[in-house]
Length: 360
Image (cartoon, rainbow, N blue to C red):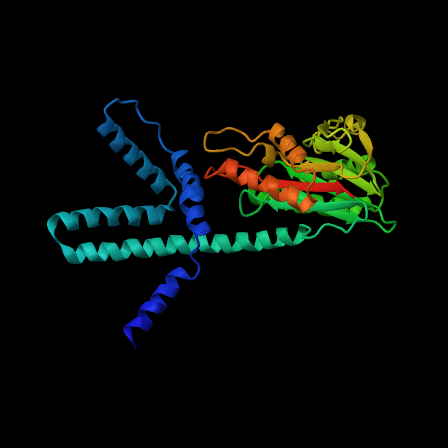
């Protein structure tokens, strides 16, 4: 076989899936997260001002934190193997050094296999969750609709949904389950199914959310709570009920101003008495042409940059006003571009969800 062909096969093997986005993700976004994973279980340094001593103390504590994360058998074999390797290198026993190198690679292969198995399971869970998130909002003669759903981890606790009824009315739901990761994702699926079921038996957002709250205490884990907004869309009218979620932003095209719709309402799952239902308040809006109604999760406004500063609600209001002449899709993309620029290489801390409605 020609050398050029062998070189090309090797090159293709290592480069076919390699992208700049993957390199950025590994070295700038995932590395700090992995570093924190070990550091948070490290023993605190003693406060010695000698930099050399501090370096060795940190290295020792980091190594111990790493070993604690291994299973007992792997921890013992790995530690013995490192000692054998160092001793062999110092004494010039190259056969033993090579053997310990092989053992270290085998241990690495086992650890990677375990990680890949867990990742495959997470990918299945992610596929299930993504399949339950609407890929395309409903067609509406009165509104342009655009939405975005992005999880901080493989799976997330935010949810959005569009639920149509036979009379042409449809509901928009957006929410944020307490917690993160797999547990939040599983509860998100339960809540979504519960919400879809109960919409068939109620006529307004307030009564639907009250029914959801009662059924959480009956059928879902005690102690689960989450924020949500449920909106009924009928023609150009919107009936909005908020249960502890971030206030809806409303851009009024007549006054060219952006305000928060801050009605009362506590999060679901906190209280099972009449206090919850009494706290809920519905607000009705009749939209004018080019009005914008913006739903979002706190992962948007609380996006942090490398300096730990938050994007903030005022910036989102400013973007809505500046881009109010654009389509719903363009407004969403402008906000996502600003989020990406602001975040830079900072770690993603929370799920990011948004829905843009623009009146036609």
